[in-house]
Amino acid sequence: MIKHLTTLIRRTFFEGAPRSIQAKRNIFGLFVLRGISTAINFVLVPMTLAYLSSNRFGIWMTLNSILAWVMWLDVGLGNGLRNRFAVALANNDRELARSLVSTTYAFVGLISAALFLLFLIAQPLVSWSAILNVPPAMNEELSRLALVVFMFFCIRLVAGLIGTILIADQKPALSSLFDALISVLSLCAVVMLTWILPGSLFWLGACMSGAMVLVPIAGNVWLFRGRYREFSPSLRYVRATHARGLIHIGVQFFLLQIIGLVLFAGSNLIIAQLYGPDDVTQYNIAYRYFGVPAGIFTVVLTPFWSAYTDAYTRGDTSWILMTFRRLKRMILWFTIAVIVMLAVANEAYALWIGKAVQVPFSLSAAMAAYVVIVAWSSIFLYFINGTGKIRLQLLIAIPALLAMIPIAVFLAGPAGLRSTGVVLAICIVLLPGTVLWPMQTRRLLNKRATGVWSQ
Image (cartoon, rainbow, N blue to C red; front, side, top):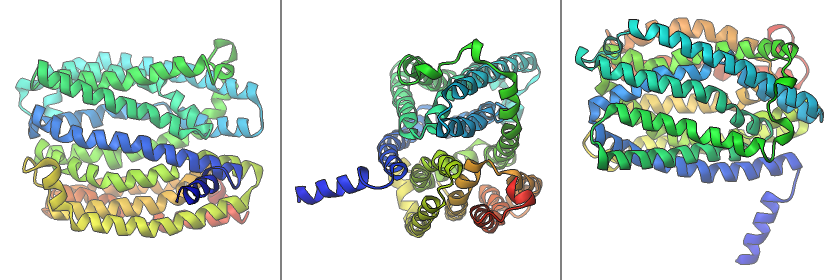
């Protein structure tokens, strides 16, 4: 038994193509760390519900999702760094790699400072109680919370670049360690607040946002003094020419991110405006439940973005095709797992959160369809994003965004489907990509991509 286990471990983690070995080691590490994060987040939901109440929990989730938009406002420089840093490493150009890191940190730092200044100017004019559809008496508390949370998000925008560097260097498991530590700190914060200051929306948001910043800051200090000392940011290595190159591809990623935010994070706001925070809570419970298989599949995919960049740069098409075959087989098991989770969804919710929140079966079914659609498309999008050929995504995403909002409002409102209608609207606009992304992938690998397919 032990001999067979040893043989299996050796074949899995020590034999095969170096790129595949590294991917499998990262997948294993990601499973462990994401498993820890997921378990803690599952525990956090009923604890936070008990701490705040369903209504205030919905308020926090909506406010957090709105302010989290700042994490995507780096004009795509993070994803530009992810691709170009991976190419620099594949070509063994260490000086270029450090210059890319330094330039990205400098420009994202400027963007972050500008965003916070604009927020300070606009804050007195914003009525958070109106935006979140809550009593006006809460406006002062929400304004203070929004200021603190936004400040932490701006800091995270810069500090979080260390995770991008780790992923570009094909070490996503180490990046995921930061997320696990943030989850641990958040759990500790909720436990302490329960003992010290029950029911405080402000202090819950401040502590959770603070944990989100503390960990990546420590990660920057640790890694740039150790493993990545040769790439540590320095003003001497900031180059405006590299910034233009990063922005060229980064702006396209940025536009896709903004569209994605409106498609996904904006759903919280639509639901809150139409039906209030309680429906937002239902939506987020279903999203987190079906986020478990989606998170597992993302764990599998995560190492491959930068691995695809490396393989495509080196012309290793055979490895890419082999990886696709394996991932396509996995999607069948993924779909079966989601169907089983849907069948037992009501029982699972009851065990997880008791009777605090009732999630309609229709919402669970729509969320199940959503995660399957996203998983299938992601198999190909990770490769396409790794090559930087994302113009077609942008051209498809813009009409999808324009269509999603009226469809969501109609299905959620006049059609009477409430939050289920919002999820169905997202599914509808994502369906064309399930055909287009495999087509683009085949053209890129066969060297037959022209025009928008190759841009």
